[in-house]
Length: 300
Length: 338
Image 1 (tube, helix red, strand yellow):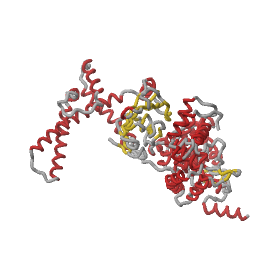
Image 2: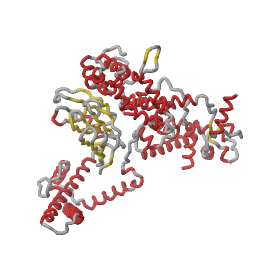
Image 3: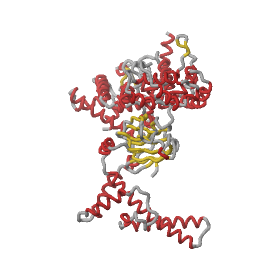
Image 4: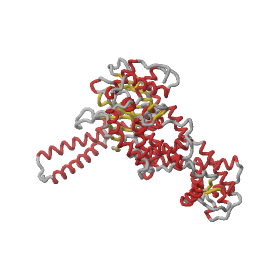
């Protein structure tokens, strides 16, 4: 809670605007919610005009509904379930079309209702909603968070890749003497080139190469048309290639033929392999082999 | 260098590969901040911090990916001129226009009187078209030789269409009513031609200022005021990026929720509690309570310069290059107009 209090007149106006009386949310309770929201953004007492601008920007009706639900108001809960439950299920199905996220959506209801007790007190997840976004968008973000946490937990015990490099050995070509060094060098210079890109370009690349989002999904995330996403990805790749060429030439002092070899060392990529595979070790990157290995590890 | 690009792609897959085991960091934004970032309601500085963080944090990137998958899709429309198969048309059209201008332009310098007249024509271009060619607002456009030709062609086409309609309805005799219709169609065609000419002039006038000049002018210009029907509520765009609201006949102004990163250019209010505001780079906002503006998803980073609205769900926005989009569901979907 902030060390300052909101003016009563402002609270009354916002309380009215939020139709908080509909859910029997008292002005004092709503004022506390507003103060919590403000405390999230302002570390020190803000300019009154700036504070007012912030408060009117909140999704006040959603905030009032959240306050009422947190307090256990029956009508508010009915409204919330009627309006948001279908959307939450839809979102869960979109995250995991096999229905695996439905239970996450159900467990969210438990948390929202305050079934989970923290040090003896019932604490509703609604208390973490401050009205900075709409309730629906917040619920989707919470659901996504739960989903990622669950995936992370389930994969926690998978073996970490020691040093994955593109698979040169699979190409059938004879091992080049400098292949390992070139691959590691390419990883380093590409990483440096990526770090020099603008955050939005890094984000776009990350969505595409790490998260495997489609161009349309990336466009939705960045408010761009998918054709624009495609063009921007191509531009970023070109920038990275030029940066890599420059680094190899100017910083690594490589000749043109050595640069060619560096690029050639990573041109054939059929999956991820450990360095030892490059040196003739066995490959274990198929899902069956990996799961077999995990099972063996668990039984041992 | 496609082979080198492929090499870069291969390495990118590895250096950017997502590690879902990555622990959330203390700096990771909470779900509400992520949601507000997605809705575009964070302050500019805060949004930039979040963007930088998500770009470099595998955990948050994974969260955003799941979040995007859970977000209902909005069909996006790409700018017609950006489509690859029409890309060639831009330089071609430019060259053709330049050639046409070179041929059409008189060899001697235009008189100042003519320049003034053309400016006037451009300034009245947005006024609704005259009902008939005899209307006094049409002479500048009607004096162009292209207008009668266009008018005749349009009138002929319209008459043919009407004739087809009548034939379908079983009417084959030419009646007095038909003659009257044809005359009216010819008049409407001429008016339409005059409007086309006026629109062309208006487009030329609108295309002249550069974007940065527009931004600077907006920032320096007096606030643009948007008045609700009846005048009980007003909004004004201050400094191009902020919006204030008044319900006291402009005697007292209060802040609203917009702090747009983009220059706001126009607004429309169909009722005292509803106001639509548009701006550069596809900025569209709507409020349904007068004060709290929501960013409406828009499929393109177009520079929007005009908006008309019927209610809080139905609006038409227009871009500086003359395109327009309609929504009937508060921006959940947009359809490209002309």
